[in-house]
Length: 97
Ligand code: SF4
Image 1 (spheres, rainbow, N blue to C red):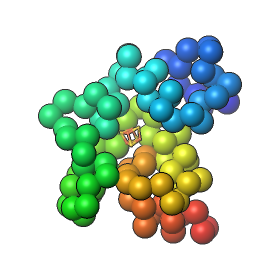
Image 2: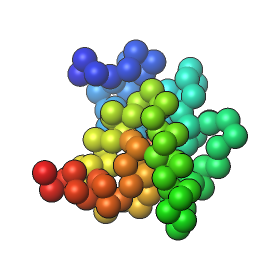
Image 3: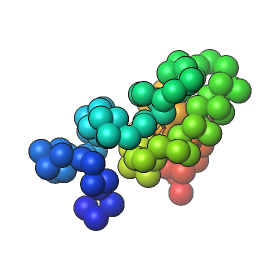
């Protein structure tokens, strides 16, 4: 578990794969673009518009939990939206590797 961010409270360290908890815990200390990003629409992450999803994926690049989120999304390719900077189709490709 060495890749678990230091901002995660001890109570969550055993279950950091619960992404919603991880996002909330991290967002108390750092900016998580899809949660508390400034000048960013949260709707981009699940938008029907490909250019908005692409912009959301770009914003993920600054997220402190991007690696954990990306793995979460790859493990769940049927989830809708952008996870860890990858769109659904990109996550599906990664899952097949
Ligand atoms: S990597 Fe992207 S989708 Fe995942 S928590 Fe961060 S901003 Fe949200």
